[in-house]
Length: 145
Image 1: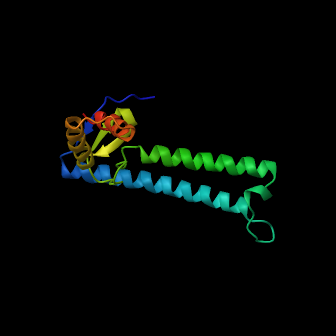
Image 2: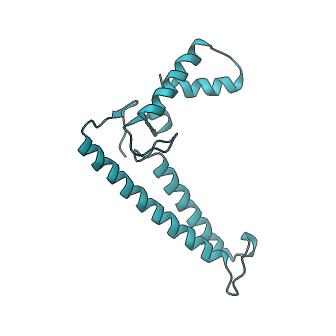
C-alpha cells in the first residue's frame, strides 16, 4: 500500500500534460462505470425469476443471496475506491482539476474545494464551540489546517 503525505498537492501547469491527465482520468472512470454497469446487470439478473417477475431478497435461494451480497460488496468497494481516487474530487466530483490529498479522510480534493474547506476551517478555529455537532465539524476542519 502506498502512503501519501498529508496535504500533498499534485499540480500540473503544462496544458498538454493537463490534457493527458484529464484523458487518463476519463478513461479510468469510464472503465469503472462499465464495471459498475456489469455488476448492476448481474444483480438484476439474479433478481428476475425465470417467468420474468421481479423477486425480493426473501425469495432468493441461499446461494443466490450469497452471490447477490458479493456483487453488492464489489459495487461498494469500487464506488469507494473510485470516489476517493485522484481521478475526481470527493466534494464536487470535478475530474479536470489539480488535486490535494487529505490524509485524515484518505481522499483527494480539487484545489478549489480544498481552498474553500481550508478557509472555512480557519474561520471555525476562531469561533471555538463545544456543542457535539460543532466538535465533529472541528475535527473535520482540523484536517484542512
